[in-house]
Length: 319
Image (tube, rainbow, N blue to C red):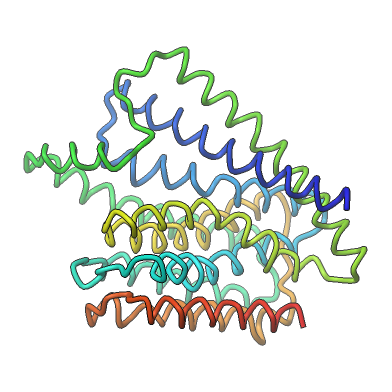
């Protein structure tokens, strides 16, 4: 029971620290005059994925690589099936109005690259470098488009972007920004340490592997920020924010988190990943094709289907 409570405490600290880091980073960038579009594409993306990144690094250092890999694969599956499914049950998302084809293709290619490298049996430093180079290319393309957008004088779009970032306050004093950054930078490693160590204790107590814990408990926990964001986006009828949040988060998870984690040590790939979990992640990714290319709306019916698919996946993993 103590291990469960400490793991829950670690998760809460992670979520609060991640939110604090995002607030501090966004407002520091705005005070320094960094364009809002670039803030949303880089700093916010990193900040919201910081819990997953810290957990994966901690897991590698603590010789629990199954948690690191399970965290990424499980989070990506949860992001599509759960994070899009549950909000759609609450309010249908009109994704037919969104044009996310280019970023979706990037995510699909990232998924295929990740699976290909996984078949090497272990994510080593060279594999990590390949993932980070791919991330750099994606960010370069996105920032190039953002700068072109700015050069065309789309100030109204920037204002809308700022309004969409609840963390943004261009007039926030530097001392408050410093507090947010400090809380985030202190809280993230503390929360990651609590969650990983106690998740490992839980796994050993119940005879469950680190991989299963990573695919379920840790993956769902670290997907909660994306779930909260998507729920609010669905309720506010901002389907582009909801779908973009999932696609961007998944791409960052695949390329950045494992890429950076390999700097701290190799990450062996459990054979079960190759037989089942990676293909479930790819299948979930392909499920987005009707919503991205055929302009289907994610209705309540689709939300129920996606949520049930995720529930079935979790049951199969635990079994």
